[in-house]
Length: 556
Image (cartoon, rainbow, N blue to C red):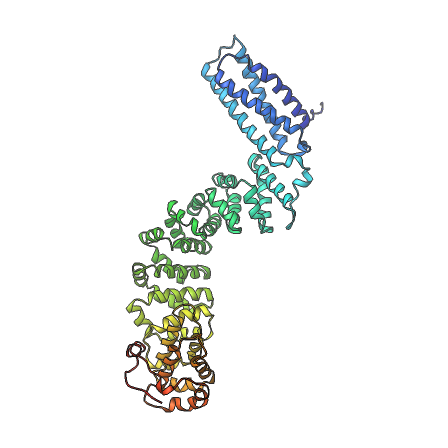
């Protein structure tokens, strides 16, 4: 049995293609039938001739694996056009006119696709480089030129390669994005991101394309912007709505990342994303829930989207995540509630109605994450503008003790919010005694002029605690408290307005006993207080009323 003939080499196929093309171009000029369709074909054949000439001058074109398929396909199309040319010049050919029109249109379509692929391959620049260079995965930190060439080759394979070419190209692309965090920006610049998004509709490549887009959306500002500008948000939301569980998680992660940019937030409403995201919050996996509530949190500050959240009954869903979600979902839900609660009475009433305050207090008791605690406290602060909430908080010994601990040991932001809450509460004497330990921290906070309102809140809270005698005694026994008070009263100290330390001194002297302050004042105040006479300190009746003092004259 004779051995099978070896397949032609790429060079032989190119020679045969060029020879046939040189025959077809002049032959098509003599065709009189279907002139419009043949004019289109001649234009495409002329373009092909130019591209093949450019190909022949590319130094490493014969090494490229994509041409092993592309060149034979081109040759097959030219043979088909040659057959059509012969039939159109054969006066004895009697097949139907409509059939010939259809055949010419199909040939033009095939040729257009192959011209596009060849042009893409040439423009990528990979044909001017050895396969040994192009196909090797650049290590992190490689030269930008090498990385750019590699990315262009990957996208060329994705766009014009077969199933196996695409699969391997996707594997290399995802590996590159995972291993080199800086690669995403270059991929967004050099690659065809819109093509990746279009592959969401192709079953065989959906998982890999969603994975790649998810990584790009999360990797950098530039790559996220490119994904959005290429129309990625709508297709991602469709995956969130109807994709498999792993794809829902990846797509929801990408949606959260895209909506983190305020300029993109409006598009969630345009694509009908609010009900889709809420549905994931109701019944999605813990991972998907976390990203979905994160996306809702990102867009909750947009007025139109808040209206949509109200219409879609979002508050019960968000409040539910405070107790049923993962730690990340709970934090984002608390953040979202704080945004909604600060937006107006409408959402505050809905949150209170859905027992949101109780769930926030429960989460506050359970959480040790400073970010989560901050969001909870901001939400509670907004809700406390309601009289019913303020009364409930004022009688909650557990909550009062918690914010006292935060004032003593929390970071500055948590201290600030906690003091703002405490200043508005009307707490009983037992609770005032229980949280006396935070008075030193309140004195320290009086020294901070920013943020606005902090000194007022700290003064009001401290004055409230000093309305009971045990706290006044404890305050003056603390040398640090008294030293700070003296420093604030010093006429040369202009960093703290005198109304704050004066109010504290007044509170210490209130109660009918001069002994509370007499001994400490001998030790601290008298030697240093040139220009200030404590027994002449006075407050206006309006200020006394604001601070809760009686209007009786007080002296040392």
